[in-house]
Image (cartoon, rainbow, N blue to C red; front, top):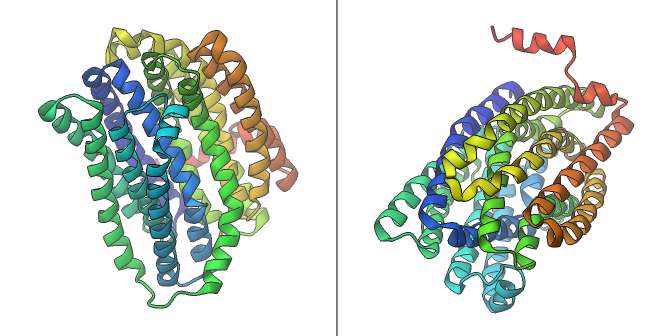
Amino acid sequence: MSFVRDALSLLATSTIVTPIGLITSILLARLLGAEALGFYSVLNNFTSLAVLLFLFGWPTAVVYRIRNRRRDPALVASTGLVVIAGVSTVVVGVGLLCGDFLREAVLGGAPPDAYAIALLIIAAQLFARLFVALARALGRFDLSNRYVLLVAVGLFVAFSGALGLAGASLRNAMFAALGVHVVASLGIGAFVLRESGLSRQLSTKELSQTIGYSGRSYVQSIAGQLHEQVDVLMLAAFLIDPAEIAAYAIAVGVVNRLKIVPEAVSGALFPHVAELDAAEAGSFAARAARHSAAWAWLAALTLGFASPWLIPLLFGPDFKASVLPALVLLPGSALLTTYMVLARFFMGIDRQGVIVRCQVSSLVVNAVLNVVLIPIWGILGAATASLISYGLETLLMVLAFRSATGQTILGTMLLRPSDIQDYARFF
């Protein structure tokens, strides 16, 4: 299985999805308005965080069990389905019981109907993440790519139809998102399970060993997602105006477009690193990190020059406030590129503890800075907190990678002349 092929397929998918996602964001901003978009952003961050919280690291364990431990895909798939079905039932049930508390304490008073729909979206995404992991473990990146494309195109079409025909409201937007995620999850599930098969018997040994690996990856998954999502949730907790949260969400959404290269590289890297010995994996990961960082910084500089006029042009003059937070977030997001790739190396060699230490340290710094800076600077304070903590997280990861592999800091972060040959092979 070719790492380059898989990485390029993910990159091509991201390249297609990115403008679609941007257009969808513009559509929501212009149709929903600032207040409804603010609630939508909070609920969207809530669902993303909840999905990782209740996956318990299972997707990474699925890839590791199939690619590294050579386990039967049918058995891995059946075990995962049983676990995710049980977790989804509990999440929706407990979420409904605790709805009033969560809406007021965490979600800034989000409407009850929109919150209930968000719980169902969480369940759909839990299954989808399992199916995506199975597809990648089987080397079927084409199936996971189709899922990503279906969600992106589906959200644009659904939002256009639901908000244009049924009325521009938060409830209609959430219903549209739910429909897309359910259809996409069922679609990829049908194809992946046909590929993997299903086992009629469940193995307690398979369950316990998968839990052992997933438990180690679970903490780092949660810490990482908290680090990326805590700013929006803390803005809501500090009762910041939903319009300001919407402006910050736009800034984050624009900056997150930088992740298309590292997400493609890291997504393909993990299954391949899991098959290599530690020394070979270290050299391979350093090379991948150098290429990812170079493209991320080039994109950050380009976006930095374009943001002051591009954001108001695309999203409307009401979102001029998004420009400054975006400019602050850009270098932090570029730095995070190196972290994302190297984290996959440590996952591939089953040393998630390194990732956890980096994430928890930077998360604590991020949370403290948010508490201090949000009351003073509002959304700019949240952006500054993220910039500092992303830089710290990347520094800690690079130092840990050097200790584990002997790769130098500059050799991990800066392109070498010999790296240019990698591009020459394509011409």
